[in-house]
Image (cartoon, rainbow, N blue to C red; front, side, top):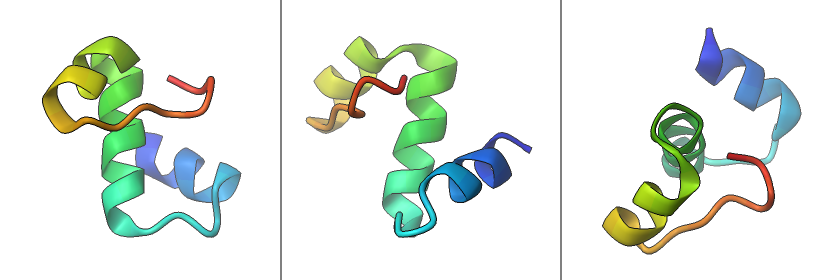
Length: 44
């Protein structure tokens, strides 16, 4: 369900970005930034 909401918010996002955004929402953007070197744009 979380990924479906992300797809609606970011229809241009690829699968990697959707996965990372979902992970950032679950685990916090700071952890994702450290683990993957990627940060969501004020989303989280």
